[in-house]
Length: 236
Image (cartoon, rainbow, N blue to C red; front, top):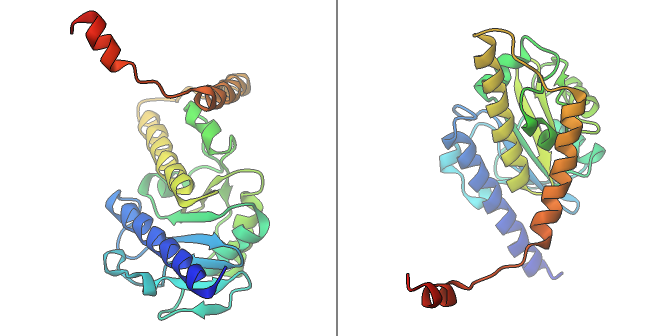
């Protein structure tokens, strides 16, 4: 691809990062400038800058770094959690990473070493949702803890910190972040009324099987539009 075409592609990715950063704030998954979002494109990673209000972001504010952490284009300092994102990209097939300080996810991370499977959405979040061991934000120790915890899954909590979700694009990674926060909320609310009923391994296995059926159902469906004939035949 010619430099002009590649620049246009990267500009679109930077705009996508801004879009989901603003959604993250609007949906209450972060407060202020906390949290961060990134999107991989080949050997480059587009990531939010450190300490900048999401509503003030312009495409040129999004930092472009290579997978080794070298800034390629960056008006501002990249997110302090750059190491976290690079570790995830190095150790998984992820093409997008969302990191939030969602209140219910953060609360649950302080009292549990995993997210109990209270709802079948668990299987859409990797099936196993561990809590990565605590480490100071922005450190190699935290990045290493996340690298270990996220192996084989797509969603984790960070002890006393927040959550990280990954996906093949930002739409998927963000949806997982929203669903994970919702499930943590459901569990904590249920816990205030008693001991929540947790899905068994067998029940989760049934969900996994049903999910595969649903994927095939959607893939096999073919669009149909018989509305005009229906209206004519029925006189509605």
